[in-house]
Amino acid sequence: MAELVGSIAILIGAVFLFSAGLGMLRMPDAFTRIQAGTKASTLGNIMVLVGIAFHHPDWTLKLVLIAYFVLMTNPVSSHELARAANTILGRAAHSPAADAQRWPAMERDVMRRGAAIVLLASLGVIFATIALNYSQRSSLPELAAAYLDLVPRELGAPNVITGILLTYRAFDTLGEVAVLFMVAAGVGLLLGAGGKERDDVQAGIRRSLQETPSTEIVQNGAKILVPLIAIFAAYIVMHGHLGPGGGFQGGAVMASCALLLLLATPNYRIKLAHLNFIESLAGLLIVVVGIAGIILANGFLDNRVLPLGEFGAFFSAGAIPVLSVLLGVKVGCELSVIIERFRA
Amino acid sequence: MTIASIVLSTGLVLVLMGIWVMLTQRNILRIIVGFMLMGTGSHLVIVAIGYVSNGTAPIIDGGLSLAEAPTRSVDPIPSALAVTAIVIGLAVTAVMLAYAIRLYQAKQTLSIDAFTDSKW
Image (cartoon, rainbow over all chains, first blue to last red; front, side):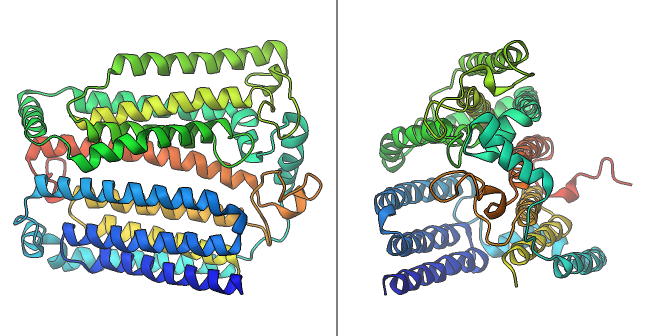
């Protein structure tokens, strides 16, 4: 009975989420779309959470926390979106008619459209063949089975994916972090350097920020949400070896914290030098842990430089939690730098 | 319909939608949205390929004991690949948006038709 009630709640939630998507597609302008996206998806998400609570009563506390999170974040984000749309576009400028006038080529260029349709149709045929001939696997390939056996036994990490990312393929992960670093530097190069025009634009943005600082909704929302998001980010980073999560995911959540702070206090300048220093330090420490692996264990970035500990305990899996924290700090700093560079 | 083929078809449809948006839209920001749509579709395809019948997340805990891990878990390698793909996709998107800002500063418009300098 409880399962039926739960399933009906999830179905109602799905209907609201669908109507949110429909609203996004069919509503005429930015403001009505924001309204559709937020209102319907808030209700839809909460109905889904209620449904899950009926299926798993022991998860209720966590689900209430998630619902609280949804109720806090959705109004703040939609308010900020609407404000941005209002300042950038102005109310009159963004009507469908003005839009059509600004982008006339797209509807009329029959040749280009026809070519696109032909290309997509042929790609669609290829994709359909792939999808129809694909049969779901019923057993794991050898490599996957080997990883599933080796990660818990050799590395002592319950989360096999984290084990692969932070030990067996940790060198790739290091390269990936290097790519993120290059992007942060490249975005700085692209947006930082500029002539007089750029200075004018920046001065304009600064003036508009001074005239309209953030509203009370965003400031109070930030006060409530920033500590919660920071704790959540730390939790994700620290439990990467035990459950879903890890450095990249936690770092991204941490950067969303930086974004919210920037929205709430637009005149505050993040000190890029500090972030760069912390980020470089974390990168250096990752390499130090890696070299320690060569000396004390079997190779670069081997996690067995520290004792493996009890399987499934918080302090376990050797160097994986350490690497996870360093990676989280590094990714968080890099993404915050990218956000700050985009601001002005 | 198996779960893997539903996810696979959804991913492939998203890829097609992304390509369609990239080919037909003239606004640079919309082209970037199309690219992200294509990226999301390819993540779904990667995850779908790793799904095994009745599989659960490859995390050893109360729901999945060490002994039954090789039979009841999904393939962890595509999941690890998806993490990489998401991070690199984000990086590429950030660079594209930075270029969009520079292009807007150069011509005061985001329409791709205005940039004819290297068109042949």
